[in-house]
Length: 521
Image (cartoon, rainbow, N blue to C red; front, top):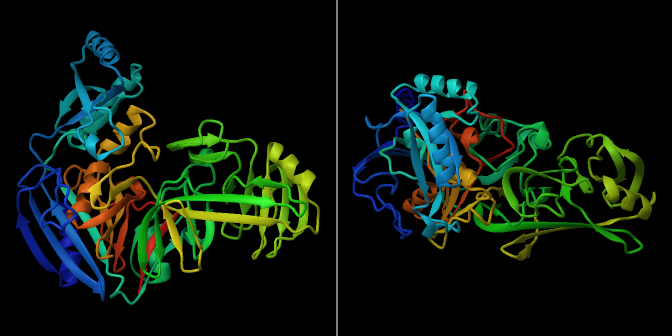
């Protein structure tokens, strides 16, 4: 309630125009034409839209849909299982301890709209039915103490495999590139990989008109360098981070946008013709967040929120990383702006030249580098970026933001969850893709207009979040023909006219992130 009142005050001060509409929704609609109402949740839900023109060619719309249902409740998910037999065994154990447990079958009702074709995803064992979250948390703590370590409190409407009345709070930025006179770009947090920054801070620092969070990134040091983009990143034409396989990414250039499958390939060649793969750029050697790298130990395919390893790598560092490379065993060469070796070291952890780079190697790759190069030699480094299988030029106007998965293609809902690493287990697919979370996503309309959207979540009285499928439905309802997911959860943030217009889900407030997409005046 507070959030609704706060936003009403903000948008009223901006003299917005209001549209209130109620209508019937087609939840499985395939048409890409804009609709008066969004096609998420149950039919005939109330929906209001408040729209403001921020600048020529830029509008901001606040959408409120649905309502808190008196049938909603808090419960405890004790565990997820792939088979009913395992779930039944746990139910019996819970009953023996005096708990009233029940089985929830997780179905893939929208399998025709995704590359995950299994009809049955798994089974969730639940216990408890409460009106207060506190009671569910207490029960979860009790179950954890008794050895049921996966038990956690949840809210019935967070399960995106069932229809809901909501509510939902949705914020939409739309840019018409033909009319917009400013600049659409992305900003690396504090202009370097090793920094993290809130979108509010980025907007304030650049005096932007509006902004939204960007792609996935490393959060904890156990998974790499905190702040490192977990996927491709190109800033002003310079490659800052390598791609994860050929995941979906957002390309910005000259205020136009494309959503494509993007991949990268890096190689180094000596004067004598010896060559080797460069495994990554501006990240910690040996740790590949969400996998999808070269000769990784676990898999070379994308595997979201999993950190693959590789003890034998060459990593390139440029000034976007920071001042010094990570310390450790290995071999390093420092290159000037022409690729000439100016220094070589038998360990890692040295200064990165402002206009040059450092090649840092571990394991057998360190041996290869040390045995094949010498001071004064000029190395040839090739950095290739492809979009939908075609090599592209990384001009200074080009920015690339990682994300995934694809949500829309050619106006149709086509969610590439399995291909892009979000269905490596049924449990992960259910809790990440089918569950309702705060989300950020981007879309492109047939006329070239660009959409940036945040949906609040994890707040039952204000907004429950959306699944991948519901994200695609929102994009489709707003007229998008291409669409993709950005980083979400506690990272979701949208700033408009110096105001944080959505309510982030983290208890600490707005989360410092790796990069932001900015609309500059």
